Image 1 (cartoon, rainbow, N blue to C red):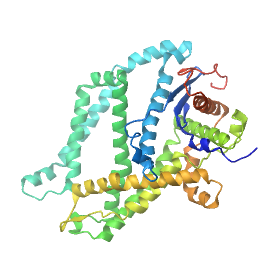
Image 2 (tube, one colour; image 1 turned 180 degrees about the horizontal axis):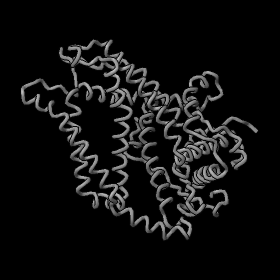
Image 3 (cartoon, rainbow, N blue to C red; image 1 turned 45 degrees about the horizontal axis):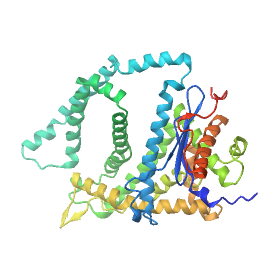
Image 4 (cartoon, helix red, strand yellow; image 1 turned 135 degrees about the vertical axis):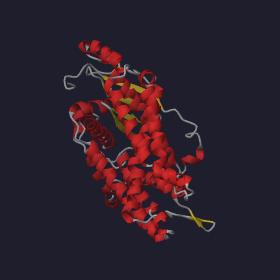
Length: 422
């Protein structure tokens, strides 16, 4: 049988979610999840076009990368939300676990003494730090020059202390709202995730780079372009190290490692249909867990291109004869990276991944994708039969939807409880 993948299968992809796999085809997507009682729950829906997806000019080469990135993020959140619902839905729990789940659900709505203690401690620590930074505030009252680099921490710490104080005083209604309002909980989770990502992969590397190199306008008076390039190089290097380190660290968490097994199962199922073999458990397990069109490859290409391009952005740009420093320099750099560089980087990365999927047997493609494939050894794990079974159910759901044009058996048990599910 021919090993050349059919063209339409090159448009199939997916992602791992907690206890499951999301698969997408040109017109549909499906999420299959292993419920706590062992059943595989499947949800199939058409891909709805957002207003972004209706902008035809964004479908052009090197522009469609940004569209694909935004679309994948939105679809991923919907898939993750469904997967979480399956794990919490009483219908899919073992009979003995339902009463316990109800008790735990009620308990989750009530604040605990430990939660209050942690909030009070955080508030006190931040309040003490606010007093530590008081000399900076006092310096302003004495007429000293405002330095945004020095004032960033003095400004952010009291704000964080105030937020913690509000959470402490109103934690009971806040926790109940987060536990009962799904959209609010997702919104808060997204905000905290973005904040965590910004601090870990942006603020810490950037601040550490200036500390290591010692190149700061406040200490040099006027930093040169090459000094800024060197600082950028250190910052971008730290970002790569922290990104890989973060993946290695979370891989040690059992739940994350299990999700990485579903990631491997997703790749094996896609590799099976691209190899034109029957979509069954044995054929899928025989495939490699790596895939050239994986989002990990996309992320690594983005990181590499971002490294090569961000290094040369003026760290302390000069506008109208004045060097921009402090907070203004940070805002200027972020604006350039987000609205100028990122669309370019996403566009190039997307086209590279598309080309790699079509020519994955070419030697130059293998060399180009080696960093991404190596990283996939971290973000995937050899799956077990139960993981592959879920991936097959998800892929068959979108294949059936593409063939019939309709979504059937949405959000219902797809198979009987599996003895392998444990």
